[in-house]
Image 1 (tube, rainbow, N blue to C red):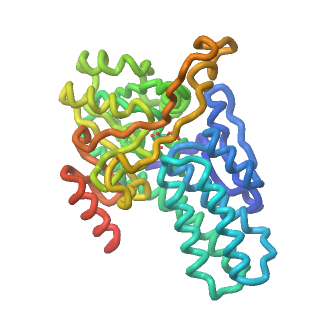
Image 2: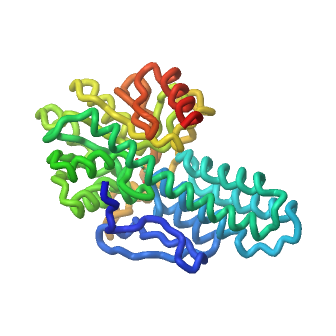
Length: 357
Ligand code: MRU
């Protein structure tokens, strides 16, 4: 699969001094890159969804942790480690649901501890290399997910997706959009339906944008149109990404995903979750153990128009994610293969495969 050149969602700058992200809150109206140097800038960018999508959040946090201790003048390991822990905890408080954030920060901490006998300068170098590795592994994982996912579908079909699990949400290719890009290169002519994804419109602003850039046939629909589109027979598969998969297969993803899964089951359409193993949390037994982020009411009442979209003072419930119960998920597609129910067994098997790979 050819690496798409358009937009680089998250990277370290050449001078090794700033995290460079494209501000996703401005797409599709503007492509503005931000150079983030301080911890509050990086925290704010993750919290405000300037950089977003579980894998991209993990990569941003990994580079953020490196930048957070790069200038440290700690003289001994203990004080360096204490500084690292403060940076880690701060970045970890930026968003609660995507496990990639914690997974990446844990990996960075393990790197610090693994190198504890080395000089501080060498630990900093190792941290930089670890963040690079997290990013590079994400590219490879997404390519593999794309291949496995493509093996499940036929050319020419209609595919529905929710939110944005594309190149913008990852180091490259995306997860749920990886098979679509791969299919595009192989002449599969998929017809993609992108849910707009209220309230922050990741489907309308980001998925529609990046698929159009790639020349994919994409039709934007409002979230409440998915049933009609499925009933019309226009969708033969659903591909979505995820923020955290529990050990039993329950999956947290962008709010509205569980409704799409229930609809898909009703219409007999396979519902596939694309999940790099960095998004699978075997320490979470079920979806009930996943913390669901609640965001500010203004995203629902006044985000998109100059005028209010709802009366002043109205009560608002604004969860950013929901949990799709495992029973609605046809398969979970990872870089180590395809897991099918019962997920309690198949996910364990995938991790065994990962350990021996
Ligand atoms: O709130 P967001 O935009 O970060 O939510 C993103 C999603 O829900 C994606 O589907 C998920 O992170 C997977 S991205 C490969």
